[in-house]
Image (cartoon, rainbow, N blue to C red; front, top):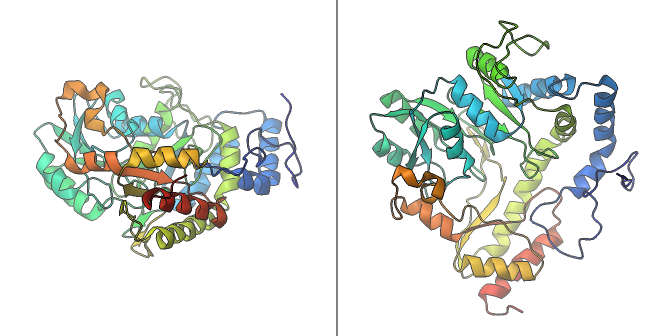
Length: 407
């Protein structure tokens, strides 16, 4: 396979990360400029991986785990091969038993609930707060049953769930609190990073995330040494052998039935380079979100814009996604596509209506806030490489649609 050299770079580019061929379109996500700028660092990190010859949970992974621990304040960070696996391993390490009820929001990516099933539990759906899109504390309190053992709030789009209120419900009902903080890197609340308000949380490094790899990768965050040790073993087939300095061990034998969920060093090499610009990227996302706010406020047909991001010391939000609720959502998406503007619909089918959960017995109308969001929500392009002129094109196309000037 031939590799194309990045303009201005010192080595070969990864195919697909050049700006050529965009033809004036505004993609939903692109990191072409980021890779062009960071390529010398990424190339050096990749060279170190190849020179070392260890491609799975090797030195680069260990370095990334240490860097993420410093960034988030977590006592332990365990790299794995996806955010979904991180959820499954965290639930298992937190003591989930077959059939345990896990309270989760009805509005989220399907992995929130399928991870519960894969870990042996039973999802129990809860309606969301219509502003934060996170699990609603009052709805949570009403949804607890005799079979509930865990609660797993999800931090979606740009802000965390209300962890003070959710923690209070968890304490009152003796529920184990874990967090689906896959989108939450850089988000803080009450002095604790997302994922560190209960037993533990997760991060996803899917390419479009705030800190994205070039493929699937994830991590578990926890301050509990026992949970960290269990996750470390479970990601490696249940083998707890201390093969690395950062890999805790109690035995050279397979102590539990685990899986193969080790992070590879190629992803860690890229993430280490991009981590150096994470705070800058978060600030850029906030600038772009503010520009959207200014341009879209008052446009007819827009039902809700996200609230202004809050970077106070007790609540630091991050615009991972710029999500708006609109009338005639599907028609707008088609119009924007014709204009060359990419969008993403989050999430057209709420979890309780997914076919894979039909046997749980939920019905349409059970969770009105989740269902309303699924019918009206759409995400607009938002990433550090987005230019303001491109953002203007997006906003103008939206105005054209709702003001009757669509071409």
